[in-house]
Image (cartoon, rainbow, N blue to C red; front, side, top):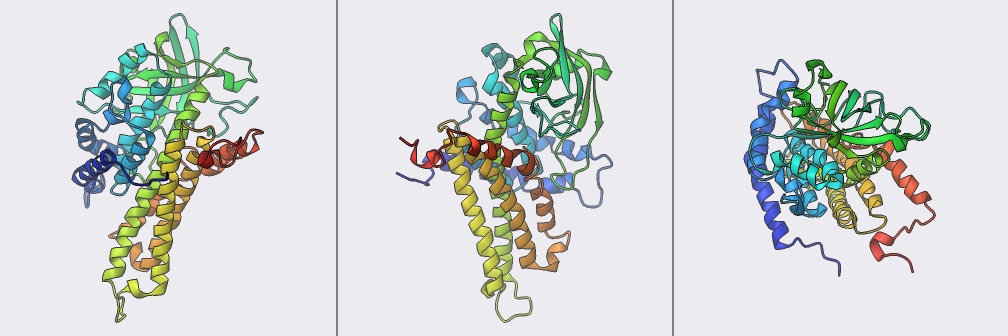
Length: 427
């Protein structure tokens, strides 16, 4: 039986998230991009959203990204997709900060020991404060080829000295990485190479994940962790994705989350789940664009005797946007359902990311063309929406360098079953 109807519990979740978004996210841009009095420091945009994040913590939206069996309230990936769509249909930057903590905790969820779960999850479970988590992966020199055999690989390295790992290297673009005060997120899952853990040419075999906490940073010399810059982005302008440096930062040996040889597998699995959620971000952006231009088309005449909705060229663009939105949502839901259930479910996650992200950019451009030159005004929302949309194809694993290459590798597999996620394995 094929059923696209949400359960009563899923409808209740969606309605709760919609209510939170309307109450807390709808006015967020006016907070981090105030009219007339811009922030003097770029990073203050991010910091201005802390009260919104506080409310998300109180509402259980961080705890909801941790599975129930680990003390949280999280459900299946399909429910996460519902949350992401509702967030992004209203606001992007403040939403990504909330969702970024979920991504930051994903390696801990997937690979942590019971002791590590107990030690590191607690700030995210008690419903108070503004705890941030970050998956610290990308590097200034690029990370698409981080596990290529014989290549230099990740430049962030760690070495074991007694009962401590000593970490050195630079990272960039990791959401929430430097925390609210540039002294680090509460939990950072740092991808690095452990020197001497595998032969030099076996780059993948050297890759590990080590947890770094704010307390770890505070227990080191001030120069062991530093923020070099806060890149000024053209969209998602209130998101924290700094350029940071570890310089002989010492953390306890017990902070090793994924040992050498396992780190790459864990981070790839984390980014497989998040790929489907980027597709859901695209759905939210397309929804926002469609709702705006549909209302515009029904109320604007532009010198005609009839509203623009009755013009074929306008209707054609609306149809394209709506069709992409519906098709992406269906693909996202199927990908989320198949993730972890089917052998080739990862393929659908990557396809949802590619199709959803690129459809979002195309749809906002169609919305701009539909409205015409007045859409170019800063007083209209479509310019900001385009700036937000264009990052979707290039972050969370760029579509060209990472996601299409992942699908290429799946297609090349001798055991590949093209329709297994729809009809089950071939017998």
